[in-house]
Amino acid sequence: MSSRTVAPFFLLIALLFCMLSCSKKKETGIPIGQFVSLTGAQATFGQSTDRGVQMALEEINSLGGVLGQPLRLITKDNQSKPGETSTVVRELISRDKVVALIGEVASGRSLEAAPIAQRSGIPMISPASTNEKVTETGDHIFRVCFIDPFQGTVCAKFARKLGATKASILTDVSKDYSLGLAKSFKAEFLREGGVITGEQSYSGGDKDFSAQLTAIKAGNPDVIFLPAYYTEAPLIIRQARQQGITVPFIGGDGWDSPELVSVGGAAVEGCYFSNHFSSQSKVPEIVAFVEGYRKKYNQDPDAMVALGYDALRLLADAMKRAGSTDPAKVNEAIASTKDFPGITGKITLDEHRNPNKPAVMLQVKNGKFVYVESVAP
Image (cartoon, rainbow, N blue to C red; front, side, top):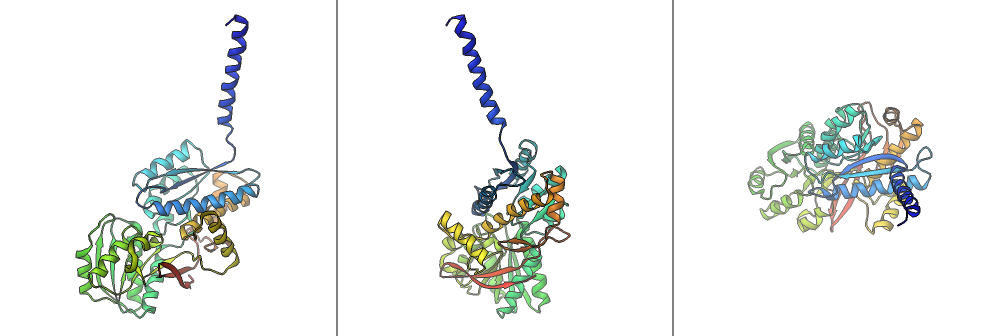
């Protein structure tokens, strides 16, 4: 290669390198972080939430984005593992420079992330963590779901409505979610004049529940409250039926997964659980949302889809009202949210950054989650 061609050659290489480097730097849009369990033990929760967030993202950006810019979602998988959430949240804040966070479903993982977001001054909206301690972390932590004291109360009142005077409780001691629900259910059931005939416990990941179920059966309850995730609930109920326990089980929103039926089969028929949303609603906005999801994914959306959808839309609405992407201003706007038209209900955040909104009770019938009733706060 002659000296005359060397210079242009290297100039071209330098130009191409610059173009590649510049293209990497020119990522446009407002960076929003999502930390979620896309794999691992509670993967269906995270996958559903992500689908809801992605639906909202597409809608928001198709309408021009926020403040003239598209939203740019950066998603990190915490693999459903304790400890992994703090790692990915720190990455989102320090490396990716997100202006807000969406996450998590599991209360334990939200409690892991919340102190990091609070110290960093980054607003965090949990789609579905119901443990009351989550938002108690600080004034930068919000949620779009109801909280465990309300959900536990709803389940206890519903149990009494079924005619139950005696209840047993089986709690996952490894989950803040389960402990919180058990506490509120017990308090309300006793307040309603009921009797707790037994309290047993297990730890997430256990497979054999025969000892706990034997003790529960001896108490002869009318209903069994099981504040579990879908990973254990169907196994427990199947083993209960094998022991001859025929009374209905009642659970919380942690049951909301197709795996409840695919694993539980006939054993879970007739059982009830509280939830944030029913795809059977006739409200026009919900009907349109359900039809849009069916068209995209060929299935009905569950509550985690709807909550993820609401979380990102509420964040976008707050940014518009703030007229800024500055985290402090966005935080202030989220806190002042009033009557936001969510798919899971109209959302007004109280002074503790929790929404006042209704719950629904669903029953497993013929392998489907069938709407029973709505319960207002």
